Length: 199
Image (tube, rainbow, N blue to C red):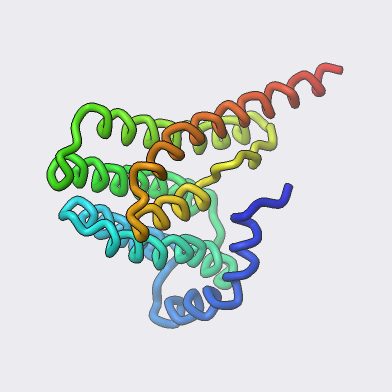
């Protein structure tokens, strides 16, 4: 099924592949690039927590597409591995944690936020993790589960836009609601596959 993230990956491929090849020439492995990406997300969360949402938004806009570089480098080097895929998926969860921790710090320290903002951040973070977990668990059981209105790319894109244009509250409400809707979409999708498997 086509998605916005699929379109962006196809569009950005010709631009990101030279980056992957350059890092390969420097001796970087795909796993090294994955960890470099984690450091970049950590820096983005730190900048956000220090009270600079627009700067953090632009950092996220740059680092988000670079998420694909480790996969491109692995394919170029013929080094795709199950551990690399596992590491990439695990690091992605930590990356989102850093972003939402930065967002929570921003609300509590710099904008006078309280329980409502903390609850929204927790809801968005939990929904994001559940979306990814639903896919991972479904695929481990042999189901296809790539559907959903807010895959990781869409979540990061929405957050970057919200930070850059100071639409933080609307975007956070959007994420807090629609990540859970996406998780429910995936639950229903897997349930329907289970029904068909017993027809």
